[in-house]
Length: 334
Image (tube, rainbow, N blue to C red; front, side):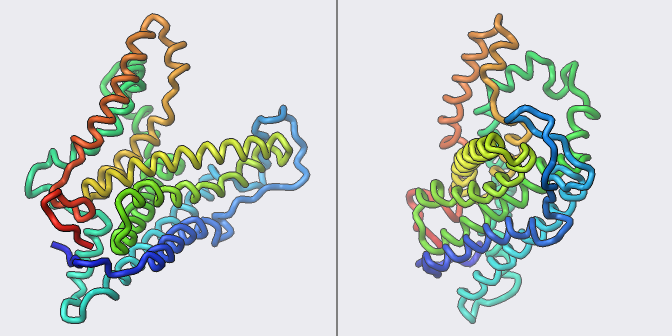
C-alpha cells in the first residue's frame, strides 16, 4: 500500500505549477538541441498548388527525418524521466519525517504514476478488459479491416509488412512506442498525480488536464506552415489541422484520463494510445465507398462500437483498490 494522506497534501496552485512544468519541459525539450530543432529554408520556389505540401530541400530538417526523430525521442525520454523525478521529489517533500524512506517514497511515486502490478494478485483479466475499451469503439474499422483481410493471421497480413514495419523504423518507434509511453507517463501519470494530491475533483481531472495534452501538440502548426510553403493557404492548412488536432487530442485525453483514474494503472491508457495511433481516425465515408454491398453491416458495426464503448467504459474499468477512484464504501485517499 503506497503512502496516502487523509487530506490533500498540496494546494491547487502547486499542482498548476507542476502541470505547467511537465507540459513545457516536455515540449521545450524537443527544441533544446540543434539536431532536434526543425530547419526550413527561406525563399523556396514552390512547384505545388496552394494547400499542397512542397518538396523537401536537401539541407532542411523536417519532423520525419530520422536524425530529428532520434534526437527528439532522446529529449522526450530525458524530459519524462525529469518529470517523474520531480514527482518523486514532491512526494518525498510532503512525506512525514518519520516515514521518509527511499523505497517507500519510490513505491508511493510509482503507485501515483500508475506503475502497479497489484492486479496480478487478483485476476489478470482485471487489467485486460480496460485495454479492450478502445478496440470496442473501433468495431466498425476493425470489421472493414476484416473485410480487407488485413487483421492478424488473415491472408493479407504478415509479420514483415504489417507488424515489423511499425516498430523497426524511427517514425514507428516515435508513433507507436516511445511517443505514447512518454506522453502517458507525463500527461496522465505525472499530471493526474499532482492534481489528485491537490484534491481536484475527478470531473476536473478528466476534462481539464487533457487540455494540456492538446496544447502540447500546438507546436506542430509551425512545421505544417513551413512544409506547405509559408503562404496564406499554408497558414490556413496549419491553423485548421492544428485546431483539429487540439480537439482530437483533448477528446482522446478525456478517454485516457478516465481509464487511468478508474483503474489506477498506466497500462490501459498506454495500450489505448498505441492502438489508436496504429488504427488512425475512423474513415467512415471511405469504408462505405470501399464496400457498398456491406453498407448496412458497416453502419451497424460502427453503431455497435459506439454503444459498446459507452457500456464498457464503466463496466470494464472498475477497480476497487484504485487510489484515484475508490469504491463507494471507501474513503478518498490522497
